[in-house]
Length: 408
Image 1 (tube, rainbow, N blue to C red):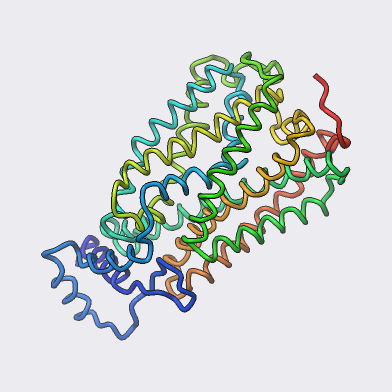
Image 2 (image 1 turned 90 degrees about the horizontal axis):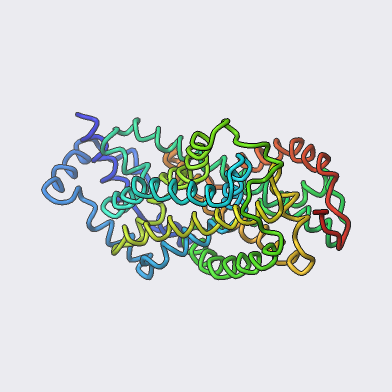
């Protein structure tokens, strides 16, 4: 039997055995029992070979659970979950490379649009298979080959989860230091990281519906907070390259611009490749349009805000410290909300994806158990980076005293 046939049978069986768990979680996949014989699987595959691979009934059942989901919901997820400091910080990269404002903006926009051209069409795969992209890839790469996609997706999401909690926790500690004089020591970071991790796990375990509701709220709330941030940081904004960056990182304009386009622009859509199918499988219409709009808005809005605040805060070597120091007193509470709620939304999206990937690798584990497992690993990675975070805090002299502003 060829890898293609094995992959087709695998998708057929996985999607055909979709059913609700006892906690009514949508989209949970269950492996067929050991009693299912090879002859039964082959017969089922041949029976459906003249149609669409045997997934029509399963697609109808799966999408009935998410029948209220449409392109707007997809845009809400991709926008709301990305309006966080873990994505915003990528907009800080071009200024730190020594580029000016317009060069940074053009690099981010160009890289994002090019990446979206190649990434968005992959959403159509889950439209047809009604399962995530890792499982769908079995049709081309076989039962074992598709595990490569699951492992890649797992590692990508793990890194982004840790990054989101790191930067979100760093800003939260800095803001609390300005508001209440809280010291930026190990205990403060440990408490903040623990709170963020616990809130993230709660959203990820409950699954698609909770993440969708959270993303809808974040899409509106975080957008409002970012708009306030533009007014907060506008008085000190400059379009000139930051002198603290020390000139072009690669010695010339075009090499540095290309690096910025890849690191800050192209990397965004590529990082979301393995996640798209987790949500497009619930949608049955205008998927490509929703994916296009969601990726472009969900990446450009937060990253361009990060670029804007980097120039306003003169953040060349560090982003979190100058961002907090340059904030006016009236914006500290909105900044705290942005760091906390935004981090939970984005990290929850990543944890949910990691749970699905691990469930594919270890099929006997339920999605909830797989999510708990990856949450423990992600939290361990966050705490492993705590010494480095404390080093940055000591280098910047800890958080400013309450009510103070960084000198200009």
